[in-house]
Length: 388
Image (cartoon, rainbow, N blue to C red; front, side, top):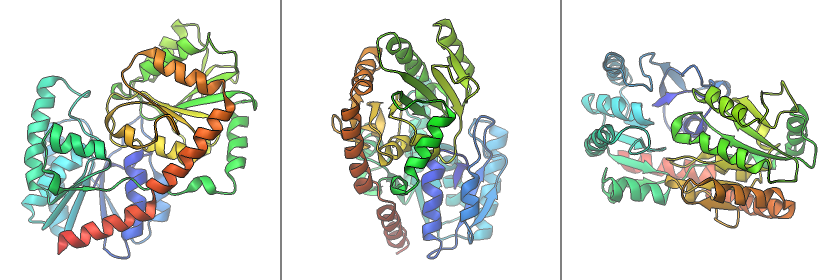
């Protein structure tokens, strides 16, 4: 059960997993409606023969009592009709309505995966307090809680006390090893040609939805601080879309920085690409990937970046620290002051050998730690043990 079938970490991780398990189980994927600023993840529909999909229109990210009650009733009816042995929910809204519907429907095994959490940086303290208390109740209804990193396990189990450690299963994300594709060089060439990037130009990207928790205003501030101080040719990319896009563009304009939507202006210093699917089409063209989030689970963008051989510079938020090796495949920054981010990015911009060395270490690390087959095997065992 997913929030939405959109381009993003949750869908990109979960749907290939379902495809790998469909020979063991009859799988029904229930999902909600995508938001206007999101890109539908249509690729998976072409690869999912043998899996049934059901969309519930009222299952939406925003809180709306009428929609939420309607989606709960629809989920309950769907579960009663399908009669599953396991209901596995992903994301915040399905994690609430889906687990409650499964519990009322008498499903024997209820599993929830925390891809991230809403316990801070999303809402005010009062709302966050309520969310934490309600998640503790849902934790009692759950057979197992899946966490993606050791840091997330500490947050869920110890910091916020959502569920005891013994109820948790630590299963890292699994990523296909697409960087070893023979056309990686072709993808880099095509991507850089599209955006007018000469070979000596360093391309720095950040990937995700343009919402407050991703803290893209900081990335804009980093751009404003860096551009006057670097001699190397450099271009920045916002890869994704969202409500803050116009505000970010206005911020850059106020700083006299030229920007462009996609490749409309190849002379622009900052490019807003909107959604790119598959993201590897543009990742191979990048040289560095940055992340400035206030709250993260396990950011798939950093794993994919390393699989593609790119060093990363990222905020020390949530499970970020578990996705790369600090000072070896990237730099982990504590806090949200512009200067440390700018300093590390400048170091990488001006040192091609360091970029290559860190990218190579990241590729090896990500391949070993985030194996898709290892994830599939772990879930196969978790499901079997839970049913038993």
